Amino acid sequence: MSNNSYQSYPGEYDHWYDQNRPEYLSELACVEESLPTVGVGLEIGVGTGRFAVPLGIEWGVDPAREMLIRARERGLRVIQGQGEVLPFDSRSFDYVVMVTVLCFLPSPEMVIKDAHRVLKEGGRLIVGFVDRESYLGKIYQAKKSKSRFYRDAEFYSVPDVMKLLPSASWREIEIRQTLFESTDEKTIVQTSRGGYGEGGFVVVSAGKA
Image 1 (tube, rainbow, N blue to C red):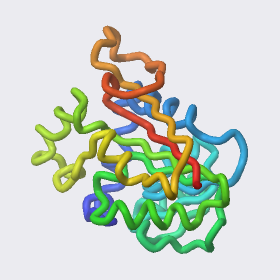
Image 2: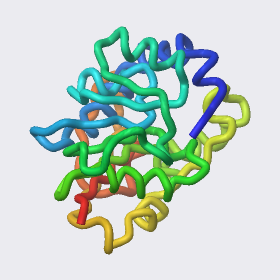
Image 3: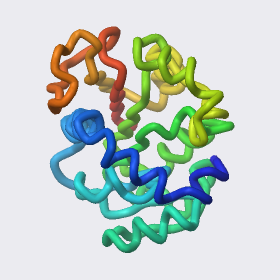
């Protein structure tokens, strides 16, 4: 779970959210609609805290120390570490969040397995990602060789993500989507809706079985 660009260019990473505010807020709203209303949360791959802070997520973990400095300045409780071996006791959290992290993981199965471990019984995992099969996923894939951050990304489709959530471990799976290509006005915050296949950004949430 590493990308040297995230360690070396935290300011450039942070600036994307300011430059692309409507897209960021649309993604943020979609994730928020999938979160439990109460409980203690952890974000894996918390970065500079651009999702965790407004969503009220208390804890974050990330391998990039420079990112965590900014996250800590924003008031988050953060630990440098890997998603494959989370530095937390079992059954510590009510929910675990991962946003645009899956595509950078060499072992997504291991990260999701350890997320399952640190969740309390009945806790939820929330995974936000750019759908590889969507119009947005195709744009990202076409441009990724020129991107400092996405050069080595491995994008996933919704069926791919579902395969990472075996029924023996996860239940009550819900899917939401946003960032629709058909939206005429690209400068507004888009409303999310259930399902997938139209939105470029998808959130899959699942309860710990």
